[in-house]
Image 1 (cartoon, rainbow, N blue to C red):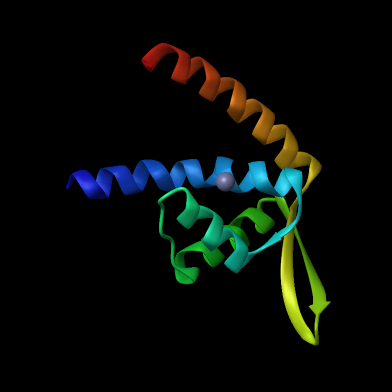
Image 2: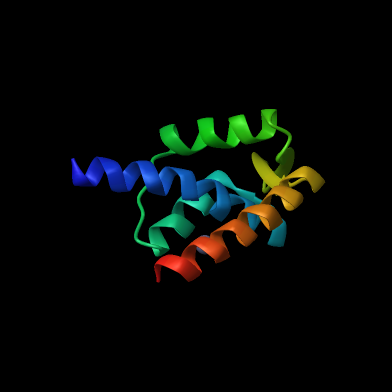
Amino acid sequence: MKEQIIRKIFNGLIYIHILHHADEESFYGSWMIEELKGHGYSMSPGTLYPVLKTMVEEGLLEKEEKNVNGKIRKYYKSTKKGNELLLELKESLKVLVGEVM
Ligand SMILES: [Zn+2]
């Protein structure tokens, strides 16, 4: 029960995390999985890719296919809409964190 609740909250925060990195530099899926691991959060490709796909559909991310040593790799980067949402989310988060911490 507790694990499920924590997972649900983290899944929401994933959006902010993805937007944050997409704003800095374009990334590919397995890079993001490793990044999340570094934060102690394991996410399978089967969970991450649908999130990325949704974010592309929502106009928050832009997908670009790059040829890396003969292999096609899908890169994701933030759109203007994604950047604006990130700024808004950061403001709300700052207020919330300021209150509860
Ligand atoms: Zn990170």
